[in-house]
Length: 284
Ligand code: AMP
Image 1 (cartoon, helix red, strand yellow):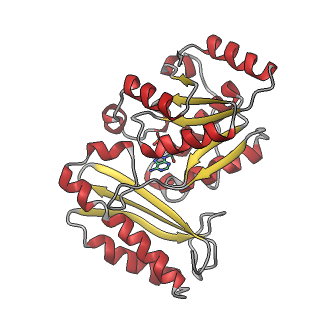
Image 2 (cartoon, helix red, strand yellow):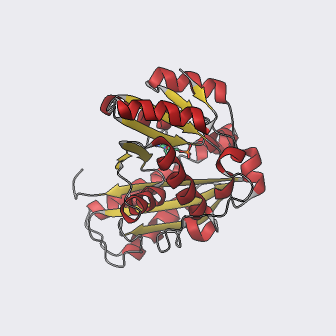
């Protein structure tokens, strides 16, 4: 399986696939691949003739230099795992290839970028939207695969596709979790074993929120208050935000209507973890 670094080579391969009428499934990642990423790759392989996985730690979406420099990296093992899951090509450009000197064009999904992750990480979604738009132009995917865990990001990408008329079908896939419920994340490797165990409390809080909604609780604030209680049981956790929101606008729901999205972000030690889920039916 080729690992392509340069843009000209990628363009040649994609051009050839398009000429032959092949469908392309695309999974953008920042690498340090885990089962969550692999589930997206497997799904892409099921639905498309050819699967491209990008591995690019996008510097412009990091608001803290320490987060960027400590972000786990390992292209060789990523390539092996991705190939086993059905990837046909890894695109791993250098930062200089995507952002050459003189680069000055950015994409801003104005309203959806503001709350939650956007407030906590200024400039984050401008970086995400810009790199996703660039990658869509370079890879020309038929379908693109994103994880529900990053619910705000997935919603923002959907808006980006609509607003800029990208001919891409968005597939948002369920969150893959460790056995205790912690959402798999590349950043989990930065947690100590004890922090990792305790971090499964984030899922307990999401479940509690979902349970209350399914039991008929409709006051958004009461639900998030209860989730905060569950989160505070985790020793040494710092809650960034927890909210029940409209999955389309991401605005907090005073009165919960289904489907509703639950978003949470916490600090465990020096590591920031986010999780999210959608509650769509009373049962389910
Ligand atoms: P990242 O490498 O963290 O930027 O993630 C790349 C893609 O994988 C994003 O669309 C994420 O939402 C998705 N992803 C990350 N973790 C998971 C997970 N545990 N389950 C499903 N998808 C995930």
